[in-house]
Amino acid sequence: MMFRKPPEAAAGLITAYVQGRPVQVNAGESAAAAAMLAGLVATRYSPVSGAPRAPYCMMGICFECLMVIDGIASRQACLVPVQEGMRIEPQDGRRSLAP
Image (cartoon, rainbow, N blue to C red):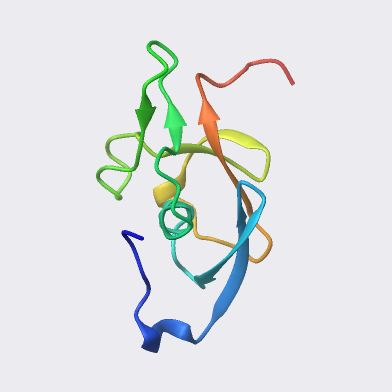
């Protein structure tokens, strides 16, 4: 696994669900960090080519980390603090405008 949390960071763990799988994440970490901790390689797929994309800048500039978070598409996962029970899913293509 590419990303691991240090042992001393075990205080304040919460559970988020990445693609339906429970992931223990430190309170205050981003949804993008939770996705990477879960081993997710692609957080979205390009609407033009279908190419897999992943978080790049982790500070809200590049928009490569767009994900579906708690049912809402096109959220910048690097800017969304993880919450207990949060549902995090990769985004396939562009966001639908239909409700």
